[in-house]
Amino acid sequence: MDPETKLTRARTQLLLSRPFWAHLALSLEIQQAQVGTMATDGYHLFYDPDQVAAWSVEEVTGVICHEISHCALQHLWRRGGRDPGKWNLACDFASNNMVLADGLKLPKGAQIGFDGQSAEAIYSQLQSSHLDAASPIDNHALWGQGRTAPGTTVVERDEEARWRQLVAQAANGARMQGKLPGHMDTLIADYLHPTLDWTTLLREFLTSSARNDYSLRPNRKHLWVPLYLPSLSGNRLEIGVALDTSGSIPDNLLRRFISEVRGISEQFTAWKVHLFLCDAQVHLYRCISSEEGEWPKTFPGRGGTDFRPVFEDVVARGLDRELGCLVFFTDLEGTFPVAPPPYRVVWVTPPVQDMLVPWGDTITLVDERGAESDLMARVV
Image (cartoon, rainbow, N blue to C red; front, top):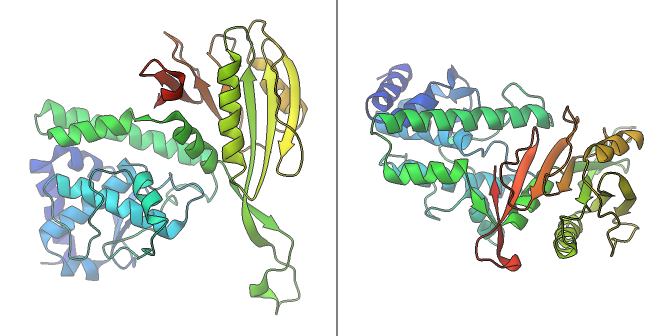
């Protein structure tokens, strides 16, 4: 059987028995390419005909779903500053678990283990190991390169949103047909509405906002050339942090939030935090970095809340093109700017009723046990 026929039969099997996978498979355009195995960039399903010819139809079906799961679980865009090799391996474990849990077959050599764990949880365990093997069933070299240029985080966020919507649509369609298994329903619900430790979510957000830091020190790989090419010296974090110092936010929450931001920042080679304390106006701006500056111990303000002065001050200081992101700690009871800024914004907020942000990401602190030390977060 030729490779093209195998691919057609594999997708037909999904249409007949697994509508969830079939819906997502139709979102990827099949394209032949010399990728060694299979690959995806979020828009295409690339396949190497020599490898597909060596697999059975059932194995081809499983690998197609493996590629789909990388998109559905956002693996292409969630790496942040992690080691690429270990991140790729962690994603393969997570994807294979999802595929095998649905009764599909994978080729011999597929990574199996860490049942039911996310890629992030698996990655944290792999950091202390020597495992860093290339996947025998797919190629990750094209991740995130669909219709984007490297580093275009705005477009990448569009891709994340597009796949989140596709997953929701696929799950609803399969559920209406009675063909969404219970374990898949739970997995998808956790993916669409994850409940995680808010400090972990904040750490993931800031890490993904870090930039590679290039210096003008000579790159040893190019010393034979009479040019000084930049060398990569580490990850650099430059973010804005705004604290709502109106009367509705207690000091203990502000201190704890600052403590988390400080702890995350100090893990980077070089970091800079542009800190704003604001209620209806900016009462304090301070630039704190790996080289200088002190974190505030008191929080002036305690008036009403207006978010606009912070964003206006960012522009006035010429920081709007410099920030990797802005994190705003607030209860959302204030006036929002009409339009979003050119940088990414996340609103970190205690639980509030009927309060929605017009743009940006949200991490909601949920006190599930009635104690501040047990605050959890839900991504909205």
